[in-house]
Image 1 (tube, rainbow, N blue to C red):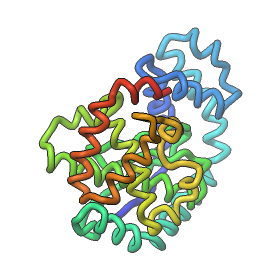
Image 2 (image 1 turned 120 degrees about the vertical axis):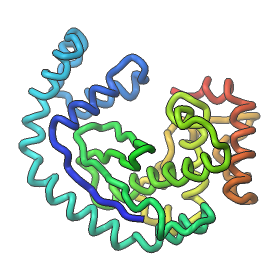
Image 3 (image 1 turned 135 degrees about the horizontal axis):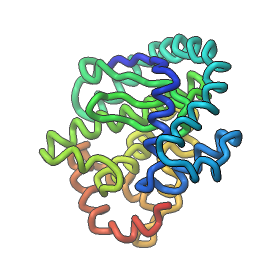
Length: 253
């Protein structure tokens, strides 16, 4: 496994922020921008056409970017150094969890340091975004979360030979992949001990209050995971969430 970080510039941040302001995304995701940047006037932003919105964001966020640019460059170094200190134990944990040698896999991962408070991952390029305010410990915790997705869908596709379009929101396969991060990390202290976000919840918050058949769904999945191989867990967990999809979606924000 290898991971590098880069700072792709203001235009990248503006472009990726705009991707999360479309109507297909939840209000929670859209509002995150205005919560993090109160200097952005949401009423003004919403009244503009898409091109105007992009220009307005660039105008407001350029001040943030110019101020933070020296710190962003320093964070690249700190993030990489922290990753390298923990790389071997993460590789060992992934190798045990997924049943293959992860010292020889996922060797081209990139973390883009961005002004976007929503941090997407891109399976086809094994890249993901890191919000610029994260410490090196926080950046590593988020990186592990995304690495679980990369490894999960690598194994998943070998198992099911299905369409990668189904791996994205809002498909139930995407929902399961977001749930699965918790049991995978919870079982192995080599992973959760170095994730400062784990105690507060490494998956989406609504999964921690979600109940299916009267039981917390993450506890149900953890019980399946601890008694199964990874591929058996994938099959059984998918069968379970697919059977209860309506109940699950009714509890998602």
